[in-house]
Image 1 (cartoon, protein in one colour):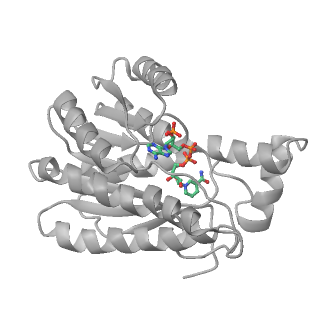
Image 2 (cartoon, protein in one colour):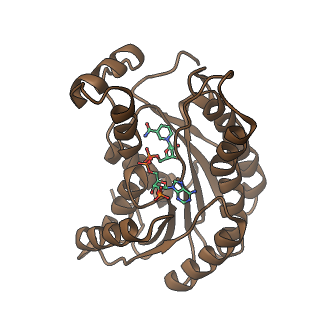
Length: 264
Ligand SMILES: NC(=O)c1ccc[n+]([C@@H]2O[C@H](COP(=O)([O-])OP(=O)(O)OC[C@H]3O[C@@H](n4cnc5c(N)ncnc54)[C@H](OP(=O)(O)O)[C@@H]3O)[C@@H](O)[C@H]2O)c1
């Protein structure tokens, strides 16, 4: 299947590792050019070098730029620099973020504020900054990485669940408003996928338990497919949504979660 992504220009926030890195790799393989960002320069540079090797022959280029997506000024200057490096913009993948464990009784106002900044406000600000360039594209896409907890709240990840629900609402509302201009907005809702953020949770919760056992037990309790997902399984869906083959998909909320979540 020709995805028609050769020559397309993409920003992937939070592209230094985990899902963002896998998404950037897949887009590059399809011939798109990609700018990734995160907060830590050394890791970003290492990832960009890795991605450039993987992309060799695909025709696309990769750039890495430091940006904290919770800082409004940085988002504006990063987007400007990314668009200049790419020579335009077709695809924005709002992926940067992280889990915030915590139940109602333990979460402070600061926890709630920090979490909503990195989840909802980063998607708002990055989309706002990208819009002028997306409006010039003939195949504009915004893909928001969310969580199944948006639709199936987990009291142990309460702030994440509530704030992800607001991200889902943002995606739907934007898909209606921007769909009229030909900009396709969709949400990809992650269940449990093994990335560095989960490796950290493993180290915090049960450092002595072998990874296979730790992830296996969690998955058996929550996931009908009885395993964690892999980043490349998410990257395939995101790349498809970015492509010409998804030209009539807008306002969709797609779970990639191995069947996790008891809802319709
Ligand atoms: N993996 C899962 O099971 C799962 C489940 C539900 C939702 N998600 C969502 O999927 C997305 C990717 O998660 P992941 O599992 O790949 O996490 P990860 O392995 O921790 O990677 C997160 C990426 O986001 C970057 N990032 C975090 N905060 C940032 C900020 N303020 N500004 C710029 N970059 C930032 C990180 O780099 P720096 O820290 O260096 O900035 C890193 O590149 C997140 O939004 C996460 O909430 C994941």
